[in-house]
Image (cartoon, rainbow, N blue to C red):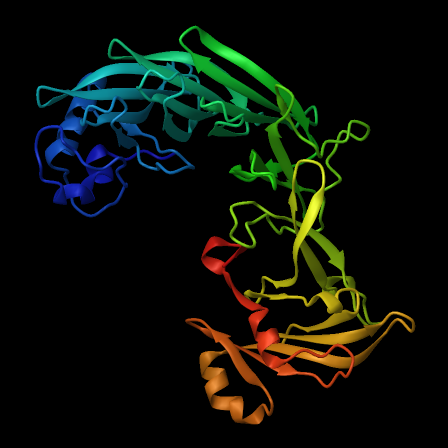
Length: 447
């Protein structure tokens, strides 16, 4: 992490020229325009520097909702924000120590109330949630460690105005959710030990008596890394956690964690191979809520038949989007995904296993052909999809007979041409309805 003065980090909040403690935002972005903060933020800066005894080495969460060195949150619901600051100091052996400092506003004056020092190299994230049901939010902080073996998750409660550590556990990713629908939020951690090639998910609850272990389950330990978990549902409506994980050079799996028989379980873990083969795919396609019903769908890939001249790098794939009830899968849709050009096409049911695609990357074309399963060869052309820049299309569309525009965005025009197949025929409107532009601002996420 890098070092900046508080004056620079909080500079653009000069517009908040209020005094006292009624700061309205729950987080402060670190921007770089004005030389000095004012109002509450100036007073928060002054309180921290007074506690530290000089300038501070601010640190910033690397992930999550809050990315500022200063995070404001009304954790006790009294209408007044508490401020939480992250900064680093040096140990005697010149290693970095991380601190979280809670700064309270008492009688219109900001004062450092509590400071906790951690053996850590940086801050991963911070979250707030009332975990023990006392009406006051716990402060959940993920810390980066010096080693490659994951991170440490620490939960703090507020007791008599001070930060009190309640638990600390290793993790790679974690979620806060009521996974068993009992009205109490669980902490669900996943810890990947890349040295031992093992991965385990654990569930905990915190109450007034302490930390309670709510069970664990094994995950595929041969993965390389995890995406952030997504809290969703099974097909049955039961709460579940979906975690996409990178496996190998270009592969991916989806892990699924939900509550079953008084504990958490992962239905995809094979106790013979110690891996998740069920959702393995040779693509970095992530799970997504394909039809917007609140249930994440897991992608399964199937290579389309290849013409003789097709190399491995030119192969096309069909994607099955499926939902899971914890045991069985149900197909939601079948698509061809084109992440390079930014669209996908829903495959009509009678086309499945009866078509293939020739990719022409230079001209941004995908040509769909009827596939003869007896002769293992292409037949009539079914459809062409091509992408042009807006300028290219406007200047050359008169040269493309029988092509029609199906969609456009800020930069591109997406056009189609229907083939002459007499076997797998579809009307133009049905074809158009199956075409969708990808939401590229969210990576591989479907509109």
